[in-house]
Image (cartoon, rainbow, N blue to C red; front, top):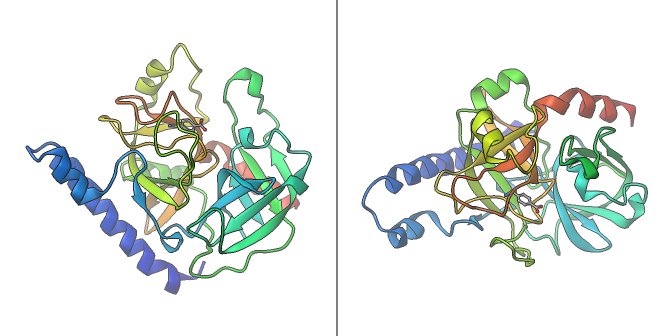
Length: 278
Ligand code: 4AZ
C-alpha cells in the first residue's frame, strides 16, 4: 500500500469519524433534527463520498448495470458477497469499475476472469457463508483512487469493534426503493452485540459466527439493496481494515434492526487461500 497517498485520506476519515461521534452526542441533546441534518447530511442514504476517501470500493456490474459492491484485496482480487453471483459460472457477464465515485462512468472497467463462491454458500439455506472472490483478467493499477484494503485479523477486531464502522455503496437510498444512487454514499455504523442481533433475527435467519451485525440504535442509517457485497470497514492500529461484507437485513434503516454482514475474520483463511491459487 502506498502510505503517502493513503495517510491524508485516513486523516480525513478520522475527522468524519469524529464528526459522527459528535453527531451521536448531538443526538442526545435538544438540537432539532433539522439542525442535525444540516450538520451531518442526509441519513439513510448517508453522505456523498469521493472515491479517494474509499479507494478500495468497486462497483460490480452484471451485463452493463451496477449489481453489487466489492472491495479491492489486491491488484487482481476483489472480495464481494456470494448472493451477487447466481451466474458465477459466467464471469464474462461481469465487470468491475474501480476508481470512480459514479457507478456508471469514470475510473477503469476491468473484466472478470473467474468467480469463486464460498463452497458452503447455499441460497436456499439462509444467508450463511455469503462471500465470494473475483479474479480480474488484468491487474489494477493502484492510484489515489484505487487502493487495496487489508482483511481484519482477530486482533484487529478486538480494536475495531469499538470504533465507528463505515459502509459505502451505490445502493438504494430508501427502504424498498429500486433506485440506485448515481454517486457513492457512505454512513457510519456501530457494531451490535451478537446476542441481541440473534434475538432480533430469531424468526428470520440464524445469525452465525460467520456474520456480524452493525447499525444504529435510532435507525435511519444503513446499507440497503444494491450495497450488497460492499465493504464494511473499521479502524485498527493505524489503518482501516475490512471487517465485513454487506449481506442481508430486514428492510433498511429500521430502528433497532441492524444489517447483517459477512464477518471477514471467519473467512480470512479462505480468501487468502483462493487468492494464492489464482
Ligand atoms: C439487500 O437487499 C440488502 N440493511 C442488503 C443489506 C441490507 C438490507 C438489504 C442491510 O441487498
